[in-house]
Image (cartoon, rainbow, N blue to C red):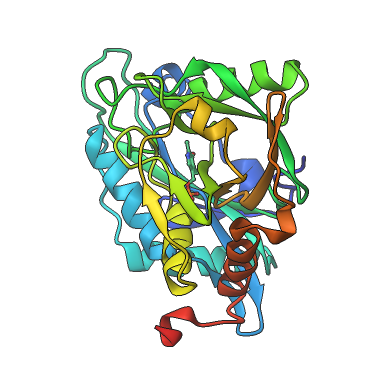
Length: 296
Ligand code: PMP
């Protein structure tokens, strides 16, 4: 995977610099303890030009993530959105994945972060889990508890848990891990939210023990427009395995259908599912082929 070459620009603390000239501080809290916050935004090549999907919401979430773990966030959302468009332009990217990252300064104590720095990078990236249906497994690892860390903070250190779960799942030959929460209910995949369909209704775990994804929210909005019922409720592993179909949602992934969980294959053909309907609608929404806000 190539993230940048010698011509690539990144945005760093108010300036555009060449990616290969920028470095990091080896004494920063971010490197040692994972105290940094990230976002993942997508830009789509639409008939209206290159468009960021819900960029304001992503940058507001970045602010919120930082605030929750005591990282100083002093950047304005509209400036960051403008700079992101400029970054895409400078890199000649029409569709891209954008990764803003807020790092913290030198501090080997476990005291609050001293200073912070923002970097925005972008590269071309296809769907995170590919375009086909994926095979999942229930992970032996559980999501971090809301009693340990704020659930809605997209903080780098949290991803150690996601990486450990994904590594374990792929070693056993699966594409993705599904993690339970600390109470033993189904929470989500390692970096995606989860929906199941059962008897013509969609179900998804409620916020509180999951990371509340922006794609998840878009799916709920689209389902409402299509008169598809969505119930947010805790799901047991048996309810997951007894579903008619299931799908995962996330910015990098988009919407991807789940073929099976461990030995259980979902019975409904993906093309007939509500997930497939929402998947088509989400694509149209991000490509600005439909303006569902106007339809409402
Ligand atoms: N869960 C986790 C742990 C994530 O990191 C992400 C995003 N990368 C998601 C869910 C999906 O969130 P979103 O739809 O906002 O991308």
